[in-house]
Length: 393
Image 1 (tube, rainbow, N blue to C red):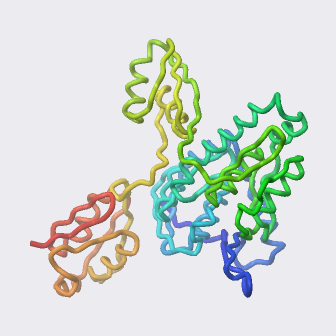
Image 2 (image 1 turned 180 degrees about the vertical axis):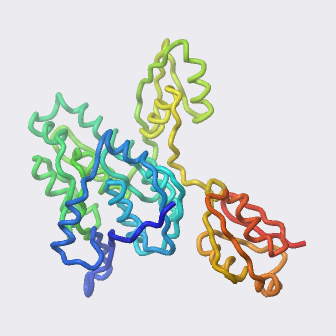
Image 3 (image 1 turned 120 degrees about the horizontal axis):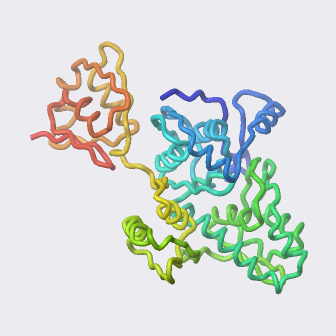
């Protein structure tokens, strides 16, 4: 494990004066000029496709203590070489304490999202961190919209179809309005946006994103307003409230000799999934993320979890300088972990909290760490995924 230095700042801020209520976001370097910030942003070679998947499997350890979320995100953008989109509804100034061992970048991003009550969604060229209801269906919404465009190929003007399926640079400049971004890109493709005012006014700052289809670009923006896009053969675009019942139908071919084993693994991972078999081909309707899980399970590969890990899945690194009181240790741990006293208050424990303790733990599972660290309280220490409790008779 190493301590990450705070080099880069992903900053959501507030505009002064009349625009003070409008959220903006930007990628910034701390303490340098605008030109230098731009050079630094361009110097990071972001990855996509297979290279991005490989980068997300690279391992590293990070430690941030009470740092603004934007700082943590910016460092991860630089070190993992992947653009990270923070949903407009996630406060970038909230303080985050996160410590990971030598784990993959993907695991780190999932853990970070969990720390702020969010989820991570992994696209072809970016990672989105947002409210769980938005994140878990984002890639499925993109896939469904791209599929809808393909279905319109015979009905749609060839030029319109070509524009909708051609990738373009998804980046935007500082103080961009999301409504305007959608209108301008649609106009360039010869598309007409019906009722653009359904997208509330907001101001976003510069974002550097990979090449993407219009479906990906529009869905990434609209999901932050709980909206979805529909496309007509005429090229008319309409915005509507998101529906939650979304799924993609795909086929999975499984060697007959492996069918029983694969089916067992699938049932263990997704017990409620409806599967239709025709010989060795399984047809399923589910999310894009679930289809990826099914593919890996069919090959017997480990499936990366996009669920934030609970407290029991963590390991702890904690060292105390000489003559550290147990009360100081308790206060420090409570910054990042809920610790509840049952049967006594801190006022009842003044003698115990004033004793000096020595703690030097690295990579200790949380279920072992907390009983050791809090042994001086002389209570029964229990660790769950949600909290630590100390119970006194």
